Length: 284
Image (cartoon, rainbow, N blue to C red; front, side):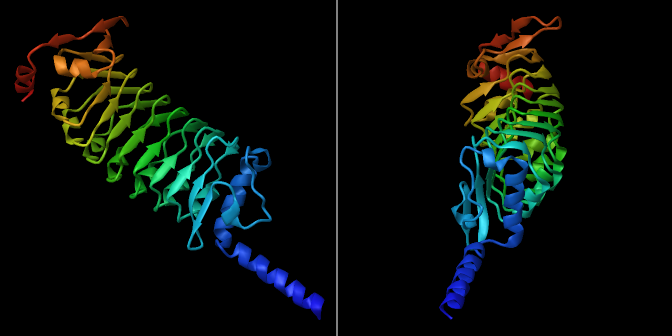
């Protein structure tokens, strides 16, 4: 009788221990563990322990709301099952050895506010489904090998404050909808292959503080509407093919004082106008 009671007690405790998240969420975490060589992580998981004790996993009200496994030696691919963690608000897999593409189903994470997959070996295009993450505030995909264009649906991310995509192979023109994201504070698109002209609509980004287009293939004139961004304190748009004249105050904002590539690939400085006000008037 005592043995039966003890056995029932153990089963009850075990059942309680794993009841802190749904079976679907637990299986999604296990799939990530399996596909990224969890046994070799710097800090691994004790799979016999409750999920809420696993490194980097935060559980609230029986739901996984945060998964932070930055710099933890994850090697492999992001499984599509990651999309089953539908209550996630933070997904941070920064600085690992992840490869392959970003799952299209990642857009099912509708509650997510921070998505950081930076400093990995991810390839392919940026899934358009990311643009369905209506609560997203911080998107970091920098230092991967992502290619293709920036999804034109990017303008749907109305709460986005940080867009960091530098050091990839992204190309094409910047989508017009990007300039509707009035909450953007940081836009880092440097060291890609973006081309086309920089729209004068950039003045709509009224919250912008840090803007970098360094080392791309942008052309045309530098929009004088940049002067209207009163919160802009850091900017680098050098090593493109912009031309024409620029006001002195914009040149001073740029780290390299508007150093551009000319038609033969040489580095030249744009002509600087000393009169700021006349430059603005000429654009209007």
